[in-house]
Image (cartoon, rainbow, N blue to C red; front, side, top):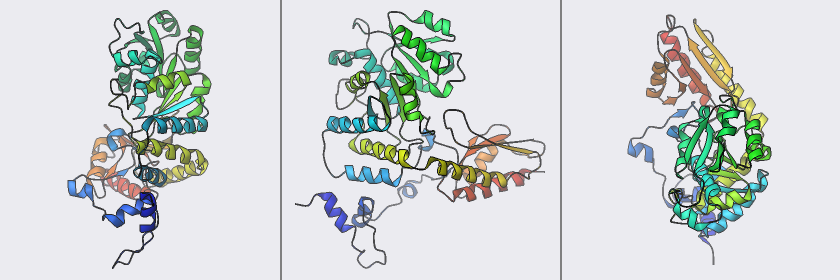
Length: 406
Protein backbone atom coordinates (compact mmCIF):
# COMPACT_ATOMS: atom_id res chain seq x y z
CA UNK A 1 0.00 0.00 0.00
CA UNK A 2 1.23 3.49 -0.84
CA UNK A 3 2.14 5.75 2.03
CA UNK A 4 0.79 9.28 1.89
CA UNK A 5 4.18 10.77 0.97
CA UNK A 6 4.33 8.44 -2.05
CA UNK A 7 0.83 9.41 -3.18
CA UNK A 8 1.66 13.08 -2.79
CA UNK A 9 4.84 12.65 -4.77
CA UNK A 10 2.94 11.12 -7.70
CA UNK A 11 0.20 13.72 -7.52
CA UNK A 12 2.63 16.59 -7.67
CA UNK A 13 4.10 15.28 -10.92
CA UNK A 14 0.77 15.88 -12.69
CA UNK A 15 -0.17 19.11 -14.50
CA UNK A 16 -2.94 21.26 -13.09
CA UNK A 17 -6.24 20.38 -14.76
CA UNK A 18 -7.30 23.17 -17.08
CA UNK A 19 -4.24 25.22 -16.15
CA UNK A 20 -1.02 26.20 -17.84
CA UNK A 21 1.40 25.35 -15.06
CA UNK A 22 2.95 21.95 -14.36
CA UNK A 23 3.94 21.52 -10.74
CA UNK A 24 7.45 20.43 -9.84
CA UNK A 25 7.54 17.20 -7.86
CA UNK A 26 8.15 17.44 -4.13
CA UNK A 27 6.26 17.63 -0.86
CA UNK A 28 6.06 21.41 -0.79
CA UNK A 29 4.15 21.54 -4.04
CA UNK A 30 1.66 18.85 -3.00
CA UNK A 31 -0.30 21.27 -0.84
CA UNK A 32 -0.59 23.68 -3.77
CA UNK A 33 -2.29 20.98 -5.85
CA UNK A 34 -4.64 19.77 -3.13
CA UNK A 35 -5.55 23.22 -1.83
CA UNK A 36 -4.72 26.48 -3.63
CA UNK A 37 -2.38 28.66 -1.58
CA UNK A 38 -4.01 31.47 0.36
CA UNK A 39 -2.45 34.83 1.07
CA UNK A 40 -2.98 34.57 4.81
CA UNK A 41 -1.02 37.68 5.73
CA UNK A 42 -3.07 39.77 3.30
CA UNK A 43 -6.32 38.23 4.56
CA UNK A 44 -5.38 39.02 8.14
CA UNK A 45 -4.08 42.50 7.39
CA UNK A 46 -0.55 41.66 8.55
CA UNK A 47 2.10 43.52 6.60
CA UNK A 48 5.21 41.72 5.38
CA UNK A 49 8.55 43.45 4.98
CA UNK A 50 12.08 43.19 3.64
CA UNK A 51 14.37 42.30 6.55
CA UNK A 52 17.54 44.41 6.45
CA UNK A 53 17.72 44.45 10.25
CA UNK A 54 18.76 40.94 11.30
CA UNK A 55 17.52 37.84 13.08
CA UNK A 56 15.29 39.47 15.69
CA UNK A 57 12.66 37.27 17.31
CA UNK A 58 10.20 40.18 17.15
CA UNK A 59 10.71 40.18 13.37
CA UNK A 60 10.22 36.37 13.22
CA UNK A 61 13.90 35.50 12.94
CA UNK A 62 14.94 34.17 9.55
CA UNK A 63 13.30 32.64 6.50
CA UNK A 64 13.51 28.87 6.53
CA UNK A 65 15.48 27.19 3.77
CA UNK A 66 13.71 25.07 1.17
CA UNK A 67 15.56 22.04 2.57
CA UNK A 68 14.07 22.78 5.99
CA UNK A 69 10.56 23.17 4.62
CA UNK A 70 10.90 19.89 2.76
CA UNK A 71 11.97 18.13 5.97
CA UNK A 72 9.03 19.65 7.84
CA UNK A 73 6.54 18.55 5.19
CA UNK A 74 8.07 15.06 5.17
CA UNK A 75 7.59 14.82 8.94
CA UNK A 76 3.88 15.69 8.70
CA UNK A 77 3.08 12.46 6.87
CA UNK A 78 3.75 9.82 9.57
CA UNK A 79 3.73 9.25 13.31
CA UNK A 80 6.86 8.47 15.33
CA UNK A 81 7.67 8.12 19.02
CA UNK A 82 8.98 11.53 20.04
CA UNK A 83 11.78 10.22 22.27
CA UNK A 84 12.96 7.83 19.55
CA UNK A 85 13.25 10.71 17.09
CA UNK A 86 15.04 12.90 19.63
CA UNK A 87 17.47 10.05 20.33
CA UNK A 88 18.37 9.50 16.69
CA UNK A 89 18.45 13.15 15.67
CA UNK A 90 20.48 13.97 18.78
CA UNK A 91 23.04 11.33 17.85
CA UNK A 92 23.25 12.68 14.29
CA UNK A 93 23.63 16.29 15.44
CA UNK A 94 26.28 15.39 18.02
CA UNK A 95 28.33 13.65 15.35
CA UNK A 96 28.00 16.64 13.02
CA UNK A 97 29.14 19.21 15.59
CA UNK A 98 31.72 17.02 17.32
CA UNK A 99 30.27 16.84 20.83
CA UNK A 100 29.13 14.01 23.11
CA UNK A 101 25.39 14.61 22.92
CA UNK A 102 22.71 16.93 21.60
CA UNK A 103 18.98 17.48 21.78
CA UNK A 104 16.55 19.75 19.95
CA UNK A 105 14.79 22.33 22.11
CA UNK A 106 12.14 24.99 21.54
CA UNK A 107 14.71 27.76 21.08
CA UNK A 108 17.88 28.79 22.87
CA UNK A 109 16.02 30.01 25.97
CA UNK A 110 14.44 26.58 26.29
CA UNK A 111 17.90 25.03 25.99
CA UNK A 112 19.03 27.19 28.90
CA UNK A 113 16.11 26.13 31.10
CA UNK A 114 16.34 22.44 30.21
CA UNK A 115 20.11 22.39 30.58
CA UNK A 116 19.86 24.01 34.00
CA UNK A 117 17.22 21.50 35.00
CA UNK A 118 19.46 18.63 33.94
CA UNK A 119 22.36 19.95 36.00
CA UNK A 120 20.09 20.27 39.05
CA UNK A 121 18.29 16.94 38.87
CA UNK A 122 20.70 14.57 37.22
CA UNK A 123 18.85 11.41 36.15
CA UNK A 124 16.43 11.59 39.09
CA UNK A 125 12.88 11.71 37.72
CA UNK A 126 11.45 12.60 41.13
CA UNK A 127 13.64 15.69 41.33
CA UNK A 128 12.70 16.63 37.77
CA UNK A 129 9.08 16.68 38.90
CA UNK A 130 9.93 18.91 41.88
CA UNK A 131 11.38 21.83 39.89
CA UNK A 132 11.19 24.79 40.31
CA UNK A 133 10.75 24.14 44.04
CA UNK A 134 14.24 23.45 45.38
CA UNK A 135 13.79 23.84 49.11
CA UNK A 136 14.06 20.52 50.94
CA UNK A 137 14.86 18.54 47.79
CA UNK A 138 18.61 18.25 48.25
CA UNK A 139 19.20 19.98 44.93
CA UNK A 140 21.65 22.86 44.75
CA UNK A 141 20.15 26.33 44.57
CA UNK A 142 22.61 28.78 42.97
CA UNK A 143 23.94 29.67 39.53
CA UNK A 144 26.80 32.13 39.18
CA UNK A 145 27.18 34.61 36.31
CA UNK A 146 28.90 37.92 35.64
CA UNK A 147 26.94 41.15 36.09
CA UNK A 148 27.98 42.15 32.57
CA UNK A 149 26.21 39.02 31.29
CA UNK A 150 22.85 39.81 32.89
CA UNK A 151 20.74 39.91 29.73
CA UNK A 152 16.94 39.44 29.74
CA UNK A 153 17.21 35.90 28.33
CA UNK A 154 19.12 34.82 31.42
CA UNK A 155 15.71 34.73 33.10
CA UNK A 156 15.49 31.23 31.60
CA UNK A 157 17.73 30.10 34.46
CA UNK A 158 15.20 31.26 37.03
CA UNK A 159 12.52 29.02 35.57
CA UNK A 160 14.22 26.24 37.51
CA UNK A 161 13.98 28.09 40.82
CA UNK A 162 17.65 28.91 41.24
CA UNK A 163 19.09 32.06 42.75
CA UNK A 164 21.42 33.86 40.35
CA UNK A 165 24.59 35.10 42.03
CA UNK A 166 26.29 37.99 40.23
CA UNK A 167 30.04 38.58 40.26
CA UNK A 168 32.41 40.91 38.44
CA UNK A 169 35.97 39.69 38.94
CA UNK A 170 37.68 36.32 38.97
CA UNK A 171 38.36 36.77 42.67
CA UNK A 172 34.66 37.39 43.34
CA UNK A 173 33.79 34.33 41.29
CA UNK A 174 36.10 32.07 43.29
CA UNK A 175 34.70 33.46 46.53
CA UNK A 176 31.07 32.96 45.40
CA UNK A 177 31.52 29.23 44.75
CA UNK A 178 30.11 27.18 47.61
CA UNK A 179 28.24 23.95 48.33
CA UNK A 180 25.04 25.41 46.81
CA UNK A 181 26.66 26.28 43.49
CA UNK A 182 24.97 24.19 40.83
CA UNK A 183 26.39 25.78 37.69
CA UNK A 184 28.30 28.72 36.20
CA UNK A 185 26.55 30.51 33.31
CA UNK A 186 28.26 32.46 30.52
CA UNK A 187 26.76 34.68 27.78
CA UNK A 188 29.08 34.37 24.82
CA UNK A 189 27.96 37.58 23.10
CA UNK A 190 29.04 39.53 26.21
CA UNK A 191 32.47 37.95 26.47
CA UNK A 192 34.34 41.23 26.03
CA UNK A 193 31.98 43.13 28.34
CA UNK A 194 32.87 41.07 31.39
CA UNK A 195 36.14 41.05 33.31
CA UNK A 196 36.35 37.24 33.15
CA UNK A 197 36.97 36.10 29.59
CA UNK A 198 35.71 32.81 28.25
CA UNK A 199 38.86 30.69 28.67
CA UNK A 200 39.47 31.88 32.23
CA UNK A 201 35.83 31.26 33.11
CA UNK A 202 36.06 27.62 32.04
CA UNK A 203 39.39 27.20 33.81
CA UNK A 204 37.98 28.40 37.14
CA UNK A 205 34.96 26.11 36.77
CA UNK A 206 37.15 23.08 36.06
CA UNK A 207 39.29 23.90 39.07
CA UNK A 208 36.22 23.69 41.33
CA UNK A 209 34.46 20.91 39.39
CA UNK A 210 31.44 23.13 38.61
CA UNK A 211 29.37 22.47 35.46
CA UNK A 212 29.31 25.32 32.92
CA UNK A 213 26.83 26.51 30.32
CA UNK A 214 27.46 28.93 27.44
CA UNK A 215 24.61 30.83 25.78
CA UNK A 216 25.65 31.08 22.10
CA UNK A 217 22.16 31.80 20.76
CA UNK A 218 23.17 34.13 17.92
CA UNK A 219 26.76 33.00 17.50
CA UNK A 220 26.79 31.38 14.06
CA UNK A 221 28.44 32.38 11.83
CA UNK A 222 31.24 31.47 12.04
CA UNK A 223 30.53 27.78 11.57
CA UNK A 224 33.31 26.64 13.91
CA UNK A 225 31.45 28.08 16.90
CA UNK A 226 29.22 25.02 16.70
CA UNK A 227 32.03 22.96 18.24
CA UNK A 228 34.49 25.56 19.55
CA UNK A 229 32.95 25.95 23.00
CA UNK A 230 32.18 22.33 23.78
CA UNK A 231 35.76 21.51 22.81
CA UNK A 232 36.94 24.40 25.01
CA UNK A 233 35.38 22.61 27.98
CA UNK A 234 31.85 23.95 28.42
CA UNK A 235 29.55 21.19 29.65
CA UNK A 236 26.51 22.65 27.86
CA UNK A 237 26.20 25.08 24.94
CA UNK A 238 22.95 26.58 23.64
CA UNK A 239 22.15 27.77 20.11
CA UNK A 240 19.10 29.23 18.43
CA UNK A 241 17.81 27.29 15.44
CA UNK A 242 16.03 30.18 13.75
CA UNK A 243 18.86 32.69 13.37
CA UNK A 244 22.02 31.99 11.36
CA UNK A 245 21.13 28.33 10.92
CA UNK A 246 17.83 29.35 9.26
CA UNK A 247 15.88 26.49 10.76
CA UNK A 248 12.50 26.75 12.52
CA UNK A 249 12.28 29.93 14.60
CA UNK A 250 10.79 27.89 17.45
CA UNK A 251 13.71 25.42 17.61
CA UNK A 252 17.11 25.43 19.27
CA UNK A 253 20.01 23.18 20.18
CA UNK A 254 21.41 22.01 23.50
CA UNK A 255 24.88 20.52 22.98
CA UNK A 256 27.35 19.07 25.43
CA UNK A 257 28.14 16.26 27.82
CA UNK A 258 26.02 13.12 27.65
CA UNK A 259 25.19 13.10 31.34
CA UNK A 260 23.74 16.62 31.27
CA UNK A 261 21.92 16.37 27.95
CA UNK A 262 20.30 13.09 29.02
CA UNK A 263 19.27 14.66 32.32
CA UNK A 264 17.89 17.70 30.52
CA UNK A 265 15.65 15.40 28.51
CA UNK A 266 13.94 14.30 31.75
CA UNK A 267 12.46 17.79 32.02
CA UNK A 268 11.41 18.00 28.37
CA UNK A 269 8.26 16.85 26.60
CA UNK A 270 6.63 14.39 26.35
CA UNK A 271 7.00 14.17 30.13
CA UNK A 272 4.16 16.16 31.63
CA UNK A 273 5.10 17.03 35.21
CA UNK A 274 8.19 19.13 34.50
CA UNK A 275 9.25 22.74 33.99
CA UNK A 276 9.89 21.97 30.33
CA UNK A 277 6.50 20.54 29.40
CA UNK A 278 5.43 23.79 27.78
CA UNK A 279 8.66 23.89 25.75
CA UNK A 280 7.53 21.17 23.40
CA UNK A 281 9.15 20.63 20.01
CA UNK A 282 7.30 18.55 17.47
CA UNK A 283 8.67 16.07 14.96
CA UNK A 284 8.51 18.67 12.22
CA UNK A 285 10.77 21.08 14.12
CA UNK A 286 13.16 18.28 15.08
CA UNK A 287 13.70 17.23 11.47
CA UNK A 288 13.67 20.86 10.37
CA UNK A 289 16.60 21.84 12.58
CA UNK A 290 18.52 18.74 11.52
CA UNK A 291 18.04 19.68 7.85
CA UNK A 292 19.07 23.27 8.60
CA UNK A 293 22.22 22.15 10.37
CA UNK A 294 23.20 19.71 7.64
CA UNK A 295 22.75 22.38 5.00
CA UNK A 296 24.65 24.98 7.02
CA UNK A 297 27.63 22.69 7.48
CA UNK A 298 27.76 21.83 3.78
CA UNK A 299 27.52 25.26 2.18
CA UNK A 300 30.30 27.53 0.94
CA UNK A 301 30.67 30.04 3.79
CA UNK A 302 33.31 32.10 2.00
CA UNK A 303 31.09 32.57 -1.03
CA UNK A 304 28.17 33.55 1.17
CA UNK A 305 30.34 36.07 3.02
CA UNK A 306 31.42 37.66 -0.27
CA UNK A 307 27.78 37.97 -1.30
CA UNK A 308 26.97 39.78 1.95
CA UNK A 309 29.92 42.12 1.45
CA UNK A 310 28.82 42.90 -2.10
CA UNK A 311 25.26 43.57 -0.97
CA UNK A 312 26.48 45.88 1.78
CA UNK A 313 28.76 47.71 -0.67
CA UNK A 314 25.84 48.24 -3.04
CA UNK A 315 23.72 49.81 -0.29
CA UNK A 316 26.64 51.90 0.96
CA UNK A 317 27.21 53.29 -2.53
CA UNK A 318 23.70 54.72 -2.55
CA UNK A 319 24.41 57.06 0.38
CA UNK A 320 28.19 57.67 0.29
CA UNK A 321 27.97 61.04 -1.53
CA UNK A 322 25.48 62.63 0.85
CA UNK A 323 27.09 65.62 2.56
CA UNK A 324 27.47 65.25 6.33
CA UNK A 325 26.96 61.50 6.28
CA UNK A 326 29.43 58.84 7.43
CA UNK A 327 29.18 55.13 6.69
CA UNK A 328 31.36 52.28 7.89
CA UNK A 329 31.23 48.53 7.44
CA UNK A 330 31.87 46.64 10.66
CA UNK A 331 31.62 43.04 11.83
CA UNK A 332 30.52 42.42 15.43
CA UNK A 333 33.17 40.24 17.09
CA UNK A 334 30.85 37.50 18.36
CA UNK A 335 27.05 37.51 18.08
CA UNK A 336 25.51 38.44 14.72
CA UNK A 337 28.99 38.15 13.24
CA UNK A 338 28.16 39.44 9.75
CA UNK A 339 29.05 42.54 7.69
CA UNK A 340 27.04 45.43 9.10
CA UNK A 341 26.60 48.87 7.54
CA UNK A 342 26.58 51.58 10.20
CA UNK A 343 25.42 55.00 9.02
CA UNK A 344 25.45 58.26 10.97
CA UNK A 345 25.05 61.88 9.95
CA UNK A 346 25.25 65.50 11.05
CA UNK A 347 21.73 66.55 11.89
CA UNK A 348 22.30 70.10 10.66
CA UNK A 349 22.99 68.69 7.19
CA UNK A 350 20.69 65.67 7.11
CA UNK A 351 17.49 66.77 8.79
CA UNK A 352 15.94 63.51 9.87
CA UNK A 353 16.42 61.30 12.90
CA UNK A 354 17.47 57.67 12.80
CA UNK A 355 14.02 56.75 14.03
CA UNK A 356 12.57 58.90 11.26
CA UNK A 357 14.51 56.99 8.61
CA UNK A 358 13.29 53.70 10.08
CA UNK A 359 9.69 54.91 10.03
CA UNK A 360 9.96 56.12 6.44
CA UNK A 361 11.31 52.77 5.26
CA UNK A 362 8.78 50.86 7.35
CA UNK A 363 5.81 52.84 6.02
CA UNK A 364 6.87 52.81 2.37
CA UNK A 365 6.24 50.23 -0.32
CA UNK A 366 7.51 47.61 0.10
CA UNK A 367 8.01 47.90 3.84
CA UNK A 368 11.65 47.61 4.95
CA UNK A 369 12.95 47.04 8.47
CA UNK A 370 16.43 48.21 9.48
CA UNK A 371 18.18 48.37 12.86
CA UNK A 372 19.65 51.13 14.99
CA UNK A 373 17.81 54.41 15.18
CA UNK A 374 17.80 57.20 17.71
CA UNK A 375 18.94 60.71 16.90
CA UNK A 376 21.19 60.31 13.87
CA UNK A 377 22.12 56.75 12.99
CA UNK A 378 20.87 53.46 11.59
CA UNK A 379 22.43 50.09 10.83
CA UNK A 380 21.78 47.53 8.14
CA UNK A 381 22.63 43.87 7.57
CA UNK A 382 21.97 41.88 4.41
CA UNK A 383 22.23 38.26 5.57
CA UNK A 384 18.45 37.91 5.90
CA UNK A 385 17.70 39.47 2.50
CA UNK A 386 16.47 37.50 -0.46
CA UNK A 387 19.19 38.11 -3.10
CA UNK A 388 18.17 41.12 -5.16
CA UNK A 389 16.41 42.91 -2.30
CA UNK A 390 19.60 44.86 -1.59
CA UNK A 391 18.78 46.97 -4.67
CA UNK A 392 15.41 47.92 -3.19
CA UNK A 393 16.97 48.75 0.18
CA UNK A 394 19.69 50.85 -1.47
CA UNK A 395 17.19 52.83 -3.54
CA UNK A 396 14.78 53.52 -0.70
CA UNK A 397 17.48 54.37 1.84
CA UNK A 398 19.22 56.68 -0.61
CA UNK A 399 15.94 58.44 -1.35
CA UNK A 400 15.09 58.93 2.33
CA UNK A 401 18.46 60.38 3.28
CA UNK A 402 18.88 62.48 0.12
CA UNK A 403 15.45 64.02 0.58
CA UNK A 404 16.39 64.98 4.13
CA UNK A 405 19.75 66.48 3.21
CA UNK A 406 20.12 70.25 2.92
